[in-house]
Length: 243
Image (tube, rainbow, N blue to C red; front, side):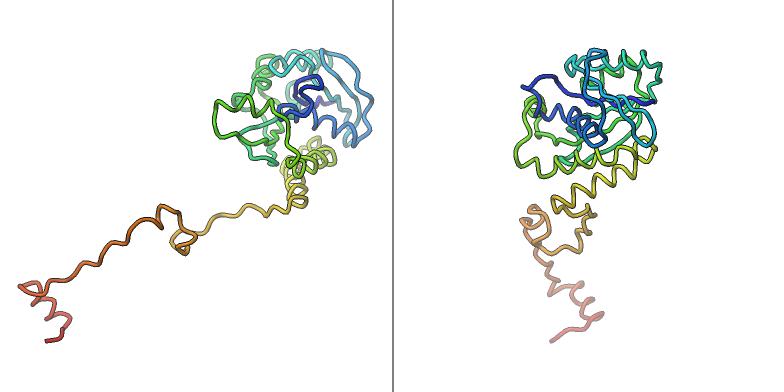
């Protein structure tokens, strides 16, 4: 048995927030694999089903984000599961929109939901980090994550969630690289985004490709060789010259 937790804030007010994308991921898995209806338990909502022959308990804590660990810790203790049996889906501002990364362990990275879970069960669980982008200014982060996804975001959000639901079994099998690749390909196919490529060496770039700083830098004038004196005589002797 494994526990899959999607993080978010309960209630219609927060349903479309970037901070609730973990709830959306849990819903996508439940829909795709015909899990049981959601029911109240462990200070959260749970649904049961199977993925790859493994029983899965989906949970959406209803304790609000900052206390997510209370609900998840209660569920782990009830089912006598180790933290290694836990996978958490949540929003990550340090990833660009539409990107997804999976890792086990690590720090909270400023995420209060993860900090709460770490405090209740430790940090040796799997994290599925769903990129929602960074507003660019630290003071705007709270407004950003508690803001709703824009209509334009649906272009990448819907295929990303569909792919999470379709390929969640790969997480159960431990094929995390394969899972990340499937999600990435699904998003690229829908958005037309090209795979990331390394920038060419700046020395081979044309002036239009170079930075505006380099373009704006004035060309240094060529140094004019001396026309008279010992140095001029030596240069003429070495390279010749017109009389």
